[in-house]
Amino acid sequence: NYLEFNQKKVKLLANKKIRQAMSLTLNRKQLVNDVLGDGSVTPKGFVTTGLATDPTTGKDFATENTVKSAVTQDTTKAKKLWKQGLKETGKKSVTLTLTHDDTDQMKALAEYVQGQLEKELPGLKVQSVTVPYKTRISREIAGNFQLVISAWQADFADPVSDLGIMTSTNDYNFGKWKNADYDAAVKQAEQSTDPTVRWTALGKAEKIIGTDEGVAPLTQTTLAQMVNPKLKGLIYNTS
Image (cartoon, rainbow, N blue to C red; front, side):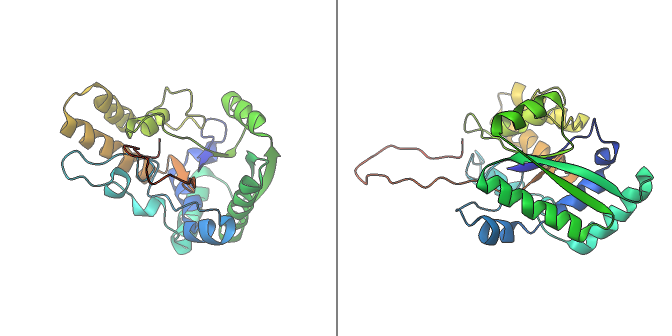
């Protein structure tokens, strides 16, 4: 799950410092442990932990390429960036809507995000918009939102399955975040057949979206399963 900013519709959200400030208000450990308590884990970045490993070192991609500031709480820094962002955009106060699904999990998640944003960022008011899943999707596609709690699951066990949806021309990039260096890195990863070149390009893309706070990662959902110990050859990853 991640917080997506409609940068096309809301000029304020196109400001990097504003997005960073919002992300920095969130304590993701508190969110998964005390608010949700459903087995969700804290994210390392946009790409999920456990999806793919470095072909050279065997290290997990998300762990290897994490941008700590993108998933760590720092309310002092958040307030500073928020103040700077408001000044740069000519705002003193702002009201934003936060669209989310009507499930109990998403309601709890949205309530936490709303509370933290309003608590830590002076002059910000967040209005919760609760809708059914299909309505949320249709509004994202139409660009009819300001902030939205979105979700994605990789289709296959490669970081590009996550990172690819955030390129500037991808239909799933609902917030219309744009970064030319990111697009170039993902394109290189998609076109290269050299494992080392691909991995380096993918890592670069992950660091770019984390540093720029193209979206704000919130949680990584887990699924509990019972497996017969006699079952052999089963491969697990987060796709």
